Length: 244
Image (cartoon, rainbow, N blue to C red; front, side, top):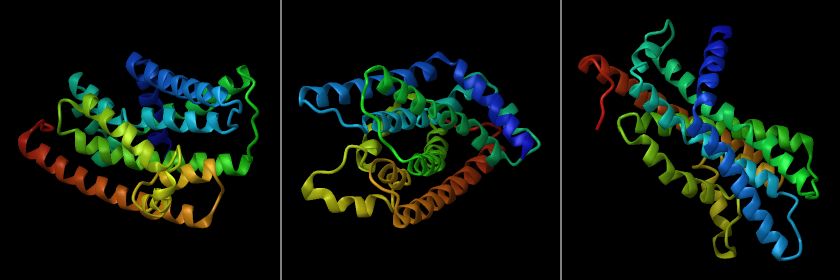
């Protein structure tokens, strides 16, 4: 476990040094916070949860860069070296994906700081924030791992990853659903792992949301493990990690 954490820490430091990944987290969090703030301010009342919503968007934006992180390793021709460590190759891939979510956690203190600067009224339950934030980290990691492994077959992962960013955010219920689609949340939380944690962070802590997150996350991890196994077997036959 210690060696695994050291590998994740090392990769996270490399990830943070990449200007694209760094500025994406910063701009996505700040722009979302300011957008929500201006919309609410124009209506005369600022929602106390805008910092949480902006943080969720910022963290997920960072998580989706996992595919680009793996492609970046391929571009630098260091992916084979990472996979040839004395650990399971699928675990090695997870080490490359985790930094995107770990670094994304910075969206929460960043968004909170913006709320303090703009004097937004902040009220929250620490248990709700810690539980929701932890589950959001786990579910985001599972989703980003699956997406990254699917896109590792493509040389244009950085382009494609942005195509799934906003749709997932909208379907997770960060901004709620129209009244006619209010029942949709009962379906999406069993399909989209981050949907449950989003409800916990923005609404209330419920056992059903936790259960839905566990079930959907387990499915995504299973899919990621299966696809990774197939890709790695293929790479051993061809001598390289294939590209479309």
